[in-house]
Image (cartoon, rainbow over all chains, first blue to last red; front, top):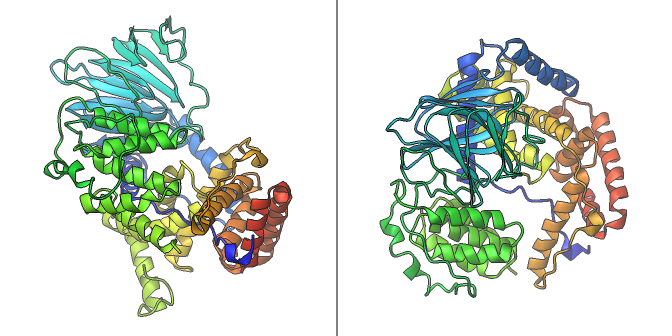
Length: 376
Length: 206
C-alpha cells in the first residue's frame, strides 16, 4: 500500500435512528422488568480487575435465577400496544402480552407487535413458551419464527428457533403451523419440527432446545411476512417470516415486481413512482394482504447472497406506493453504495426528494455526503 | 455532551453535571436515564464498534452495556468523566461478548478480493476489505490484547487512556498491544492486504 493509497482507520458505521429506537425500546423494557422484580440489588463498584470479577458475576446471576426458582419469571415486562423488542440475557424472562403470557428462555430475542389487531410475536432467536388465553371472538394470537407461522385461538405451546430450524411443542390446545407451503395441525403433547414438516411426533418429556439456541450466528435482522387476515379460527399463513426490523404500518398495495432488467434510475423517471406515496402518510395502519412487506423481507434475506437481484427487487418495490417503497428505495441506495455502484448517489438524491422526512432520511443525507466527499 | 476541558464548559461544571445526572439516573428517574442514554450512546457505540467491528449483536450489546451502566451508577464518583466511565463498562461488555464467541473458521487466504477501477472506489473497497480482514484476524486474538489493540491502534487512543478505560497499567496495555500486533502480523504473513493495512495503522499509532 503506497502513501497515496492510505486507507485510514476503519470507519465506525453509524446506526440509523430506527436502530437506535429499537435499542432504546428494548432497553426500557428490560429496565422496567428489572425494576419490577429486582429489590434494588446493584452491582458493586467497578473492580480494578474487572475481567476476573465479571465472569463470576454472570455466573452468580445465573445461579441466583435457579435458586430463586424463577426459571420463567425472572423478569416481568408489561407490554403496551407499542411494539417492543424483548431480549432475555443469561436468565429466563417472562412477558405479559395483553392477556397472554410469554416465557422466554435464556438468550432469546423476540418482537411483540400488533398486526391488523392480531397480537403477533416474532421470534428472532431462542425459545419461548406461550400461554394464550382463549381468543373467543378476538383476533387470534400469531407467532412467527423463520419460515414458520403459528396461529392459535387459545393454548399453551412452545416455539424454539435456532437459525432456520424451528420446533413447535404444544402442551394443550391445537395450533396450525404453515411452513414453506406445507401445513400441519399440532395438538396437545405433540411436536412439529421444520426438519420434518410433514411429521408430527409425540412429546415424550421436556422439550429440548433446538441446537445452540441464541448462537451468535442467529439472524438479527428480521424479515417478516404479514399475509394475515382476521379470523376467529385457527389457521395458518405462509411465506418468509422473521421479525420486522422495525414495526411499521402495513402497506395497502404492492407494486408489481419486475423480473426483467434493472429499472431506470434517472430522476425524470422517478417522480411517477411516488405520486401516491405522499398520500399514504406514515402511521396509519392499512389493511389487506401485505405483499410489500413480505417482498421487502424476502429481499433483505436475499441481500447477502445475491445483492444484484436484491437491488433489482428493491428498486421494483421502490416504484410502489406503499410505505415499504421508502425503505426499499433507501435499501437500494445503500446496497448500491456498498457495491460501489455509481447509481448510489442518484438513488439517494431521489430518496431525499421523495422522502425528505423518511425513516432513513438522516442516514441517506449522511451516506450521500460521504459518497460525495469520496469523489475525486 | 459536556466533557472536562470542553470550551465554555468548565471541568468542575462538567463533573457536577455528570454527578447529578448519575445520581438522578441511579435513583431510577427515567428522564435522567434517558438523558444519560442519549448523551452516552454514541460513546458506548463507538467503544463497542471499535473492539468488535460490524456485527449483528451490536444492538443487543448496546442494551447490555446500558443495563450494566445503570446498574453500576451508584458507584460513579466522578473520578473520571461519565463518558470515560461508560466506555469502561462498554469495554467490559465487549470483553464478555468476545469471550463467548467462537472464532470463525474462515481462511483469510480464501476471502475474495474486491475489484474496482476508479481510484476512490478502489480505495473505499480496499478499506472495507481491509477492515473485514482486520476484524476477522482480531477474532483470533486473545480478548484483552484485542481490546488494547482496538482502542490504542484502531481508535487512536493513547496508552494512558486505554489503561484508564481498561482499569490497567500503561505497561500492561503496551505489552498487550505489542502481543496483539505480533499475533496479527503472524496471521497477515500470507495476506498482503491485511499486512499493508496493519503497517498503515501502526504508523499512525499514538
